[in-house]
Image (cartoon, rainbow, N blue to C red; front, side, top):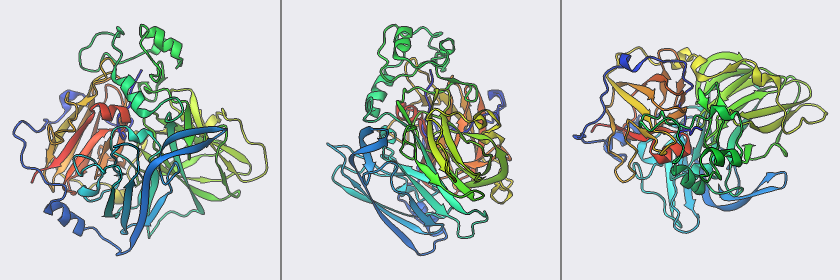
Length: 530
């Protein structure tokens, strides 16, 4: 069994150099230098350099309990923004200022925040307690205000505990005023794995996972992640009985066993989800996009899930991938694509004549999300439809190439940090470089950079699970010619090298976008030296 880490590591296959070939690691030591404050003068100076339009887009986001209709007679008690999941799309033009007031009406003393996933914004608006702000207390408000200067497909969600796995998320679309693509319409597609208010809560899921696989003998506990939960002999079952028997009777109300995927290098995920949603609907009652034959439509696909990669295809169609994580790539046609948690893909499709299934196959989990495209009369496919495109050409980020106009300029690497992904399911001790993130001391074990440097990160996955690794406040390039991204899948026992320019001062989280891996400790701080 495998776990996923917070916000997205790219499917490896791009860079698999051995650890011996890595450049020297420059991790911070016990003598951590003075670091840039998230609200310091360097952050303010960087914000002044952003090209703004002077226009302001205001919105209020009220985080509160709600009962939502998932379709098919299924209702879930959860937390949402303004009573719906996904929340209402926020759309603005590049250079506009977003002024978003968060009103926390969550129960008890629950604190929360909003992280603007993928946006290169000012550090004190990044929404990461305690590193960049104090968590917003219940009954209080906080206004996020920043210039969104980079066009693309983004989304927003909390960065407190495992709140990501509730209903608190929504798309954020930054339009390009000089859009180079030609198309007739857009369809924003948000994917999610759903447990909240159906079989339990994310906090209950995390409490069970945190117990680890205690009594299981899976090859020792070296601390290297080799212990894993590699249950390949179990096939593709997720039954509670099998899990309980295999773990010596250990409770497995939420722990998924035996989910495997060759695309993900083995274990596919940790959590039993009763539902997989497309735009907040279950497959038995899918949402419908209505268009006309021959229309060219831009699909903006967002994986807001917490433990699931999705293989996405539109039956009867081929897709042309144009962007990933907001940045353009050299266009490539495909039948299907694989999208990890926190990743986003933009694709173009020319609609056929009929009724077609948009299927998000939960990779390795034998389940799916579903929406429909209707351009003519006809019978809708069944909830379990599996279009042949799912088994056709499947593209991952490692096979894409960056568009020339956003390729990083050639430069000498100034600093290299080894980012070793460690831990395993035996003790659920996910960490970076063997050190779990300490919320009480977010500067501890920081990866220190200086403004103006070209930085190389060598993700070395020492575990038996895949991790989608997400860097806040920046985009990195995969290798020398791979796409620009902020979340990328790192496969088990593989290395992925990425590069970015240190041009946005502050303190920025780097973590696995598996909500449960990140909360367990697979997170660190990429901090600018003052």
